[in-house]
Length: 130
Image (cartoon, rainbow, N blue to C red; front, side, top):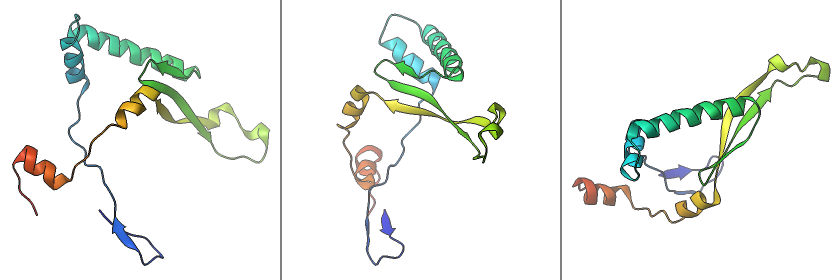
């Protein structure tokens, strides 16, 4: 990707991620089922139960560590008020769910290999672009 920095004369190139496909929960459960002795439906049941428990724990203010997957927590926000008595619970809302990957997951992602999109298309899709 070409980058022109506003207010500067320098232009240059930087890497940009091209997203591949997205795997849905059904496919993920099938893949997990293929690697162990439980059915895809059982895996789906566990995933649904995990989501429900995470909802309850996040709503109660807990942080959640899911093994080597990482940590989840709710991030809150509110409008700034001049007086602390004006800051009412009904004015507070969840802004987002934050995720912090585990050391193991971060370490494995550091081994990711990259290639130019044109090389990927040539090798895997048979498309020769210049």
